[in-house]
Image 1 (spheres, one colour):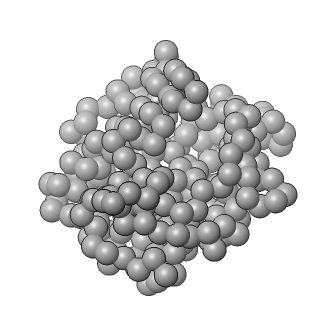
Image 2 (cartoon, helix red, strand yellow):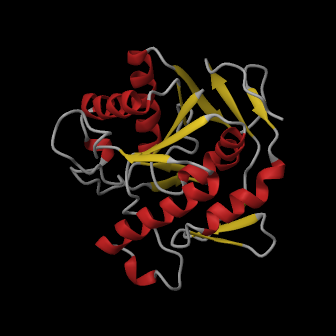
Image 3 (cartoon, helix red, strand yellow):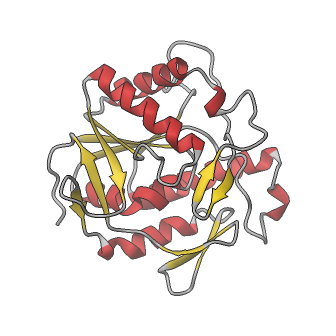
Length: 244
């Protein structure tokens, strides 16, 4: 089975679904990842890459980090939305990171200064067409992305959920949302054994976060500290997949 994971920014693929990607790849499933933006507006961890904050160099740095992380997770096929083959017969375009602001503890909302070139300002029909182009190119059977709230409200995540679901519907593909807690309607994967793999992939995203020496905790560029997530659920129409 070919599952395409669609994420908004570099590092989201590992933070939200790294263990599941590695698990499914090791079980012989084809895995591709489509990333919507380059995360140009991400904050930068103080240190060796501080000088890249707010510059074009961060764009290139995050692309490199993403390539390295995907290799650790076992992903062989990756694309950026708007870049052929994830583009529907038009000149390439870059969907920029829309940015965000914290509106409540752990809840993000739209930034006050969204660029006209940002993902959230794009016509949804354009975004959907480019997703369809990628899904056809990789011959995906199923699409996996965030739940309707984007996980924590980031406007790019919400946009990706909405457009990815529509793209999957247009092509008649299975669709599933990533959920953080087991529920009756969720296909749950206990993946604690993949913690070392996820930690190794997260260490590739050095501009955005720091993995602690315990290999189980990270500090984000904004100073937020949290445990590395591994176990995750899928809710939707994806057929039952082995969790062992």
